[in-house]
Amino acid sequence: MAEGENPDRRQLEREMHAAGRLPPGQSLTLKWPVLHEGNVPAFDPPTWDFHIGGLVENPLRLTWEEFSRLPMKEVVADMHCVTRWSRFDVRWEGVAFAELARLAQPKPEAKFVMVLAEEGFTSNVPLADLLRPETLFALRHGGAPLPPEHGYPARLVVPHLYAWKSVKWVRGLRFMAEDAPGFWEQNGYHMYGDPFREQRFSND
Ligand SMILES: Nc1nc2c(c(=O)[nH]1)N[C@H]1C(S)=C(S)[C@@H](COP(=O)(O)O)O[C@H]1N2
Ligand SMILES: [Mo]
Image 1 (spheres, rainbow, N blue to C red):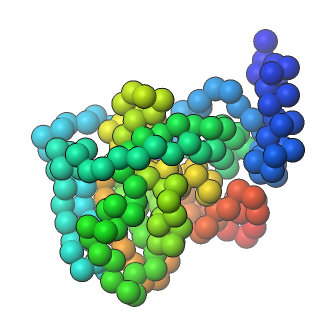
Image 2: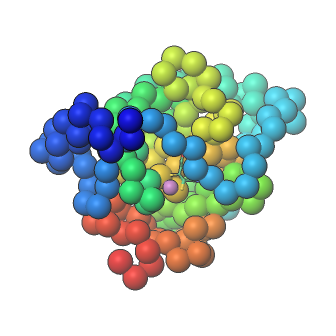
């Protein structure tokens, strides 16, 4: 049976709509679609590292050993892809963005962050949005390590923006004074990407 004809899905979609959790132009999926450019990168724990640079007092490089030992928290959040699917109540465990900001100490003039991933994928997010308590680097999902295709070993999760900002296979951060477009933003997508304001493309 096609997902669109599933009565449970339709019912849940009505509930999420009534609760104000289904953004305009989105429909609910019960599956977990896999969406990205390029290949699923291989993970090599001894050589993996995480770089924080740009406008910070304390530029740093963390090994996998160091990164994976940072304090973790759990976040349950919704996920909205610009290709019009939304997934609800996703359970993530990982390192709060605020924890890394505390280590790196952004300079007062830092207002935006370029999030850097494997294979040159990037996305830009305002620092204030990353500092929200529900923004984290997820290492685990549903009580198990992230599946490779969903970003293992670590992915950013920024639940209140379209999911292209939730960068999989993340490797670093560059703090910036001015906004600059990342990968999808250079290809016509919105610089901010609020799903509730339908900020899909640069002219929305
Ligand atoms: N590194 C990387 N992260 C990425 C992408 C990508 O192409 N490369 N695609 C984004 C998009 S458009 C979406 S919708 C989500 C999808 O996450 P999922 O595959 O875990 O559902 O990942 C985001 N993170
Ligand atoms: Mo997406």
